[in-house]
Length: 166
Image (cartoon, rainbow, N blue to C red; front, side, top):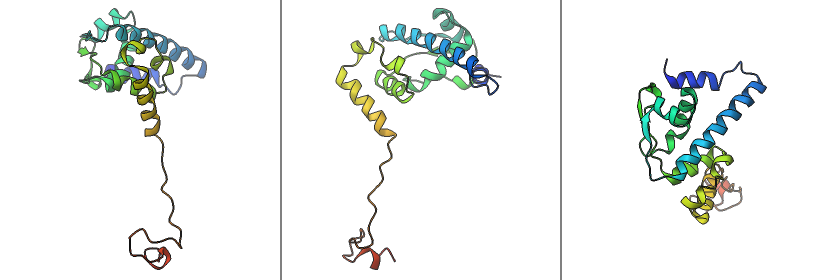
């Protein structure tokens, strides 16, 4: 079994009661926030190492580090092989700033996209633009329905009911 499968089995266990789940995710989100604070404080440094080394570096368990790597993977310039990852797999945390911010907004992770470190990395207008772009991406816009007595959208000049609406 891969590390990712083990992480998902624990994190998304169906038999986990609500209280245990809240404690588990509360702990995870606190650790995740701490790792992001460190990463965003020095974004020029591309952090690399084995999964085990990164877990030690950020003072967390191997399992929590795998969960973190699963979460950040879509925001990396070069994704890591998370499906086949082992403890000694070398991973790279070289992230794209804008993609990372966008994905944090998409995940509704306000404890991450409101970190004070973002103020030094992306200006306020760019953060707002990324935020709005992401929020609009999930909005479904319905086209105006053609009424039966409206001109036909095919351009024939006939009423819709006598043309394409038959």
